[in-house]
Length: 263
Image (cartoon, rainbow, N blue to C red; front, side):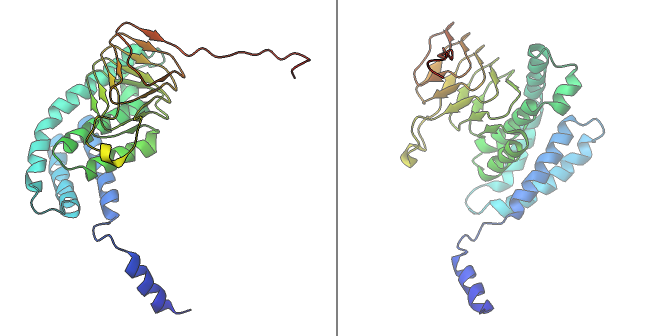
């Protein structure tokens, strides 16, 4: 075995100069610190903000490859958004408590509900995404995805009092627009009809208006698809066209009873 030849071949094919997996690990650490800073009663806010700034500075050094981008101002802008993000997350937690009869306390929502955790990391990532700093937010939401089964692209726009029940299998695409007081259940997909690369800057994912409920395993596709306010989308429904306000959409299963002749 010519070890040096193998090493040379491997180095030749390692073509991405910025592919540093420490960024992934450090982003996960930053995400944990951020979550604890906002919610944990034993975590001092003042001390942790200093720690977060240091961790974020390291992320900047690793991820800000373009010298023309003003990465030095990202943290200053971001920290000003944290009180507003926390206010929204408290509304999300209250919505879950009020909507889910299985919830026993507000503390349970914050500590044990994967839907709340996924929403929290999405909201924290979304503010970074809006500042034109996409990779770290994507790593943050992917970290939450791995833990909860909920895949929310940080580019999605989600209003107040959002509720994801049971969480697993939910997919919300980059250009999805969700208004206030929306409830969705496990397995829901808000996706695109087409995935051609030239549609990157086009709205590809649906708009969900306020007070809509989308039940388990429903699939809603397309950037021009709008689900009108106060509508209910039943489980397993498949939609690629808009629905007017105050509608109920449901999937009708076909039931066949086994008999001796068709068994």
